[in-house]
Length: 142
Image (cartoon, rainbow, N blue to C red; front, side, top):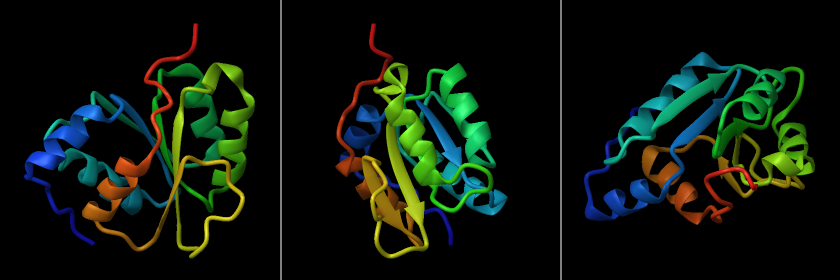
């Protein structure tokens, strides 16, 4: 899979509406690198992209860093993506966080996430999935 940079005017609009801090969660370092490169291909880069290799590390980061978007694999060691999403949803202080789950599974199942993207995917499909995400807010509630 190779990153395909988006250069259309629509990409400029989409990228400017995306949250500034993104957490990529995947136990596969190659997938984390691929996702990071996809996000770099946007016309307006994210303010900050951070990474976690497992769900427990991701939950710690979400609780300690002002994360607006989590892009997480479903199959993770320790705390899987569905349980990570549930922990985010169950914490009132994290209700602003948008979650996109990715998986080799063909159906999202009951995951409480804002969006789902089946693997394999390309940059255009990732951007389309990000476009479909509901706006939860870019900052924590007061």
